[in-house]
Image 1 (cartoon, one colour):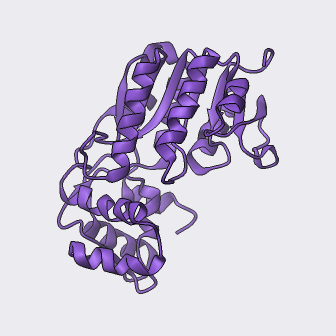
Image 2 (cartoon, one colour; image 1 turned 135 degrees about the horizontal axis):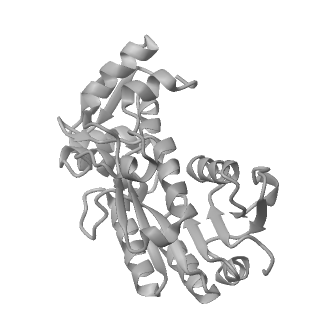
Length: 284
């Protein structure tokens, strides 16, 4: 696909990829918007929609011909997500992509507590083995999700104990990603742990949410048995329930704690904390 922008962005119809695509457009960076449905692609100056799916290697290779830098947002949670990632990474390497910027997860490892973090680590390893240059953005839990955790009764339930996390705003991840994408040569081989400015427990988050919303939000520290039982009614497959529960047990294990300076290093500004995020949010 000669003549098209050499920067390609996935996920532009979603939250994070959409933020990245808009910021790139605002900065005057032409981009291929890799989407499954071109009718849903955002209308952006310099944005060219190109149809792709992670699981279709032939289609992906064609869509990625001539791309130098690829922003790869992790695929939607699915039982075969890791295979989708492998297929797409292989297509990128075959198409001649030079540099891939992948959104991973903080603490990604073969044996990390959060089950989907293991898939992120496996994807990182596959990218390393591909021969392409890479940059990994290891995102902490999203601040954006915290207001959504409470049930209708105002209770956040999960086996997180007194554990804390340095949760990060999607907007800070997007700004960090754009810095990398606009000058990728400066970030070859780097892994950035993207966090907010502070460690926060779910009990503290509940207090801040109560103060901001006027709705009484509390945290109930479930046992593992309670956690699995309370989620059984959703009818989700076991791998999905394991992922949900292990989000909380990863917090309890301390694997999401520890603020870093990476957002400031990349963007020149301090990341949002929960109180500031809630104060600035128009959805709370």
